[in-house]
Amino acid sequence: MSNPVIVFLGPTLPVSAARRVLAADYRPPVAQGDVLRAVMDRPAAIAIIDGYFENVPAVWHKEILYAMSQGIPVLGAASMGALRAAELATFGMEGAGAIFDAYIDGRLEDDDEVAVTHGPAELGYPSLSEAMVNIRRTLSDAHGAGILSVPARRRLQDIAKDLCYRDRNYGRILREAEDDIDVDPAEIEAFRDWLPTGRADQKREDALCLLSRVRERVTTGTLGVRPLYAFEHTTMWEQVARPVLRALV
Image (cartoon, rainbow, N blue to C red; front, side, top):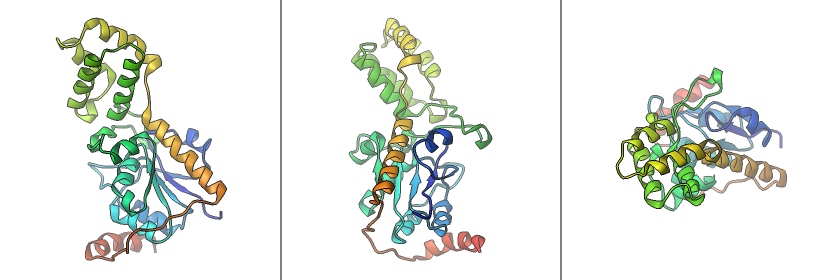
């Protein structure tokens, strides 16, 4: 295949680890306009893992629909990719991993489940907070390992969910739990001791799942897309797309 796959990746997985799974054109977390720019490079596919939001306009659904209308498969997982894949699954965007599955079946609904704060690109986008989806998985694993009872697991989960995504980390959760009369102190200490080896990273697992799937599909020649819609060049689309396309000329 002449053109590489373009992958938008940031704090979920180091590029060095991603390259060991899939040789691709790795780009920073996706923002509005980036998928449209990627379409101009005619990639074999576009894979979205991480993306900007809040202070930077998020990738627009319409540009993903445009990419697929041009015959370019778009896949997503783990973070922004899982969100957009769930939202656009009925239009032909493909998702992968447990987080995508949870959004599809309604077990997850909020965007903040995958949100994290992170450092700059020069440092490799180090995560400065913990994603709620990772906390849920870790607490579930702790319960399965006999570390947390059902009530303790649920209470720690509620404490984490009540925090702003920027403030979510295990240190903060444990401090909040220490002052909570509904959590047995012995369970908190047991969880604290178990955490260094038991901590799960669902976002990383899902990102690797997506990259492995893309590699397999490239190898077998089964990477494709059948858009389930007719793309419409609306006035809003022209207003957003025209400046991006003009900048590429």
